[in-house]
Length: 263
Image (tube, rainbow, N blue to C red):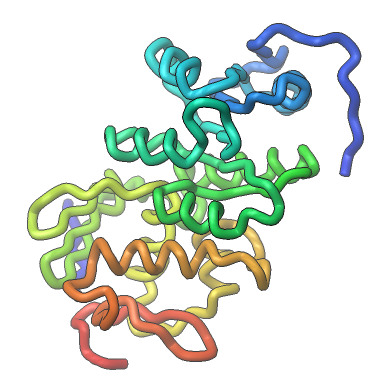
């Protein structure tokens, strides 16, 4: 029955490994790393493999395209600084082609503007370099939980649809329609919109939204929620500068108002 809701572990490389590392334990989660730093590729191949992932690493966008033709991947770890075609250009191209595989960006610590642009383009998370590999694993697991399990922000098992204005969000299939036209949502965008529409008229702080939608505490300097709210407004609102549905609660966070009245 379809329901409608109306309104720092240190480690070293001992012996370089080949460009694919399969963990001894059984797993079905394929991770693809795109980074031109050979040493980092080998390091992550071994470390992520030891954590139970099936991992492949490539150096650039061309090799990425070939890898995607051969296999489906659960998640991409994409460096921004790549030769020939940088990470932002690759991400833009993938999303324009309808490829919604989750993406975690690797960025230089000072490149805040690139991180923001990356999130606006549809990245699911980012991690500044240098980083602890344990944190990368934690972020990979958080993104995969949001995509494929019943953690908060994941698709529902039971089909139900939320309808407001000319928008429809199917909680089971993750399909979002705007005036009957399908709109692709990233994993992070779906997770955030799901939290908002299932808490109508309840003001939610940025900290709460981060925990509910992304499975981790909010960093005071992390603008991921603000960026994704801005992107959702562009998808949902008739005028994103004067939002009716996702409204700002000044000094607190955001509130979803199903009928578009002022809260």
